[in-house]
Length: 84
Image (cartoon, rainbow, N blue to C red; front, side, top):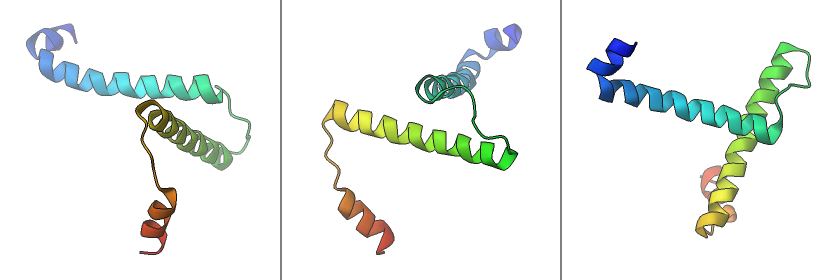
């Protein structure tokens, strides 16, 4: 891998950056929502993981809304999505 890194540094860094982002997201989820899973059945564990990912995305969106002062009209968004 070191040889590949030295010969194709830009390509290597592009892929490594994706990996770094994924690891950062997993660390954020574990830090905020806990490491372990509470469910015993595999399908329940999958659902719990998906819910943790959804909760993480909502947390990040709310943080950015507050940080950047973005005002979102959720009623308009809901109407445009669900009312067509």
